[in-house]
Image (cartoon, rainbow, N blue to C red; front, side, top):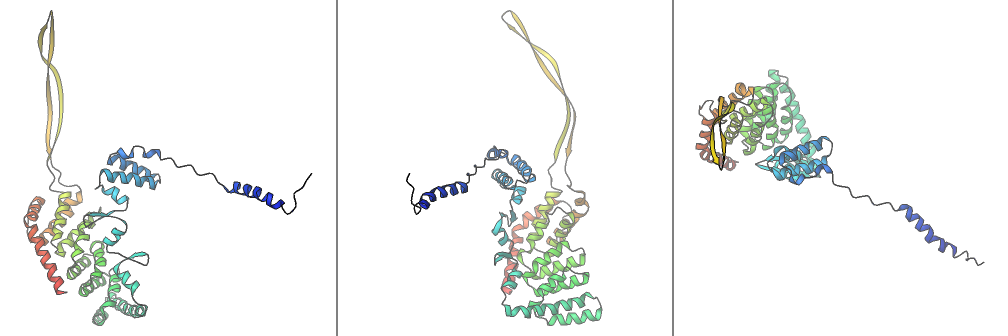
Length: 385
């Protein structure tokens, strides 16, 4: 019997060893995932059916499948608000936007891998040598605001005089913070100072307090500051606040629009008023009982037979009632309607009362003139700056 030389033995065993090793490493290919049966027929579903399916999938934690169902809803009904918002869309300037476009439309700036407000962007890009100076100036302003918050007349007067000497670039952030602090007198002073700064970067902080501050005097001071800054886009967030689910937010938004004095605010108020009360069509409700009876017979001769066809009569009795919806919420008739009426009175200088139809006709008759007047005012403001 012959034996392989010891030198050749590793060469013979190596392929066997590698085959065994590779066979242990090769894993079976995963089976292709079958489409979920719950999505069967999705492409043929109506918008309501697809929306109900999306809600059930979302409740079950199936976010990916729910997104597909929401996409089908938008294919059938592109203006379906709930499906749009579920997919991350928001309505800005009459357009549904999502992702980067939505961030940009909201006024954010993308920098260093994240979205920032204009103020955050300015701080992030400021040269390092200016940071210490800015922080020291803001700290001085915060100290002066603390004296104003004391409500001691001598300290408040001294702080106001010293505040007038501070550089405007040190005031914006501390004053924006003061809008969220007690007492209310401090918030009023902060709003007045922000109005004097005339800086559009102050608008977001002021808008929030115009809606959410519990003190009426503060809200008035905030709206006056917004009017001083006179930024053209200020009216739109207040108009969108009229869509809030909370009645007090809607009332405060209407009050702010009336005091702001922007002509476009009238269109927002009238549209919301019509959607909630006063201009609904009249409808009719009938409750009728119907009785059928044999009134007579029609007799026909067919060859040697007589055929009697019954003549059926119908009796009806009941009532028909005319109905008109006056309000969709109790709070509207007692509080919200008054706020809308007062806002339109302030914006128009007219007294057209509680009939929203009259306000609608007034807007249709004067819309072109009011918008031209607004454009001219904004143009003069731009030239003045």
